[in-house]
Image (cartoon, rainbow, N blue to C red; front, side, top):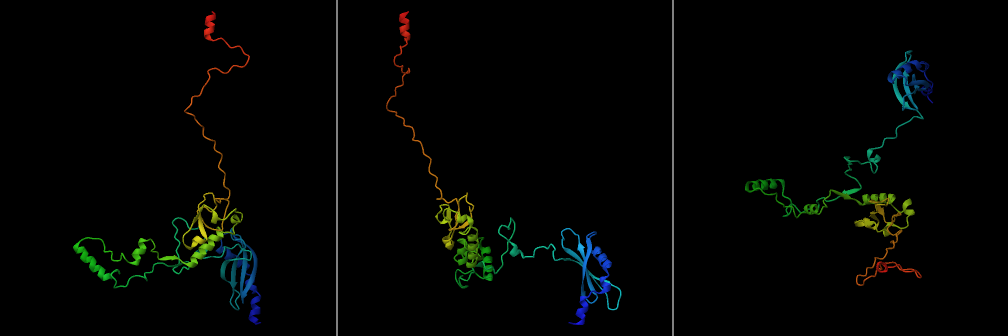
Length: 305
């Protein structure tokens, strides 16, 4: 071990005694009343010492004001080097910075927000590239720029008409009419990422699926998907299911399965039967009990008088 290294471990006496000078520098850089007690010092090298003071600033728990002082060789004047605020071993620190592309989570995109994608995004692959377009000398090929200008000039002199549809039979025009002209489409890698994400959220390993009476593959509320995803996923159309409107695995399930508990139909009373062919007799007087004396009629009362 060299002598210089040995001397650097021992703080310089004059620099170590410059506590008041270091405190004044810290108070000048900080707000009033936020510089606390002197908590220690460390030797940074020959005649270079850093003093540490407690920081009482709200929100900076565990931070320390570090003031470095130094003096020249054979000089008795201690000068100020720098003043900074440094975190201690138990300091409250902000989380490590993460790029926005890695911080983004599902649901973070709001109205008006734009989410750019990288040009070489592995989830996407080129869609229509024009590689299958007709050769330049083909009758359905798009004309060159100079030729198009001459044609437009001649057409303008003759009559005003719509631009010539020379490329209506091209692959680009056909794809545009069918709604398939996209610059990029989902790649196999992007498809697998989406499938893994959907299976993790609404798959067979979720607690809901483990307690379900049956799987979605036998549910009447499942709307099948198109393409290769049809073999593993569908869309739930049960408004009372926790996965309503979500892409679910065919192995997923919940208590809203269409065949889990079929309610029996309530009994319906038979409709009344009306006989409109025969006449029903309705007596004017209630039947007389047996052994009773019949009451005189109005005519009998008049004859007796």
